[in-house]
Amino acid sequence: MSATASRPPADSAILRARRSEDVVVGDEIVRHRLATRAIHWTVALFFFLALFSGLPIWTPVFGWMAHLFGGLNVCRWLHPWAGLAFFVSMLVMFVHWLGEMRLEPNDREWLRPRKMIEYMRYQGEDPEVGKYNGGQKLFFFAAALGALGLLLSGVVVWFPLEFPRIVRELAILIHDVTFILFVVAVVFHIYLGTAAEPGTFHSMIRGTVRKPWARLHHPRWYREVLGGKTRRP
Ligand code: HEM
Image (cartoon, rainbow, N blue to C red; front, top):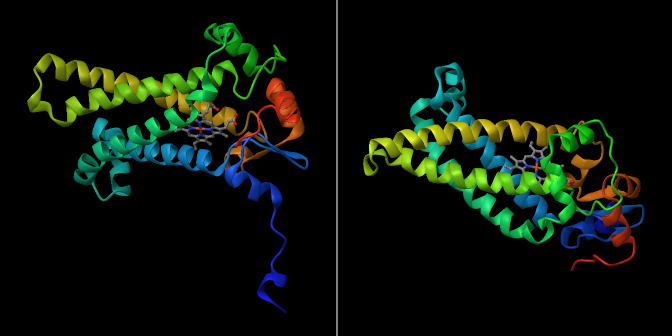
């Protein structure tokens, strides 16, 4: 028997999801092609590396985390480089996703806390939700802004002797407030991307979603993809 004959048949949706996005393959729709998934998980990796190497520097309460990296001294040099890698990967993700994250007039509604609460309660369905809803777009821009804030304040803390005292103190405040808000937002993001919406995590692993998932969460995107309007490349 030849080597090719013993292999299971290749999954056509997985193969298609390597390069294409927004296309129908059988019962599935490709939502995130391989490049998108690789960029997203690189951002996540550097985020957590920067977070876990930074927490022991921030407060002794998290001192035990330093052992993960070989001690506090390792954390002190690793953290700024992990932070820099996080910023660079965020920049790549920003450029990669910007075209799909353009805000539409309806998206402004997501700035109202009521809209967020409705969403968390699975209420207020909107048939005009495209590939990303307003909340996802706002998270995208907030994360980009947060990454910039962390970078700028981080550089000041990295090279303290180059800056006056008031700038250093302001930078520490900005760095701490931004990372705390970031962690809260990422906890919500992980919850929404996993437990709250079954099928969503799958899209960042396999690249595809089931048609009912798309019809329920992103109805306009579903209609556009089925109508062949969004095919990429
Ligand atoms: C273990 C951690 C994470 C999980 C499980 C996760 C999960 C996901 C999933 C499933 C999606 C696709 C949503 C969809 O197709 O509708 C997504 C999108 C996205 N992720 Fe993550 N993610 C994680 C960490 C991060 C981190 C650390 C960041 C940024 C700092 C981030 C930024 C984004 C952005 C901007 C999007 C697009 C907008 C959105 O869907 O909210 N993710 N994530």
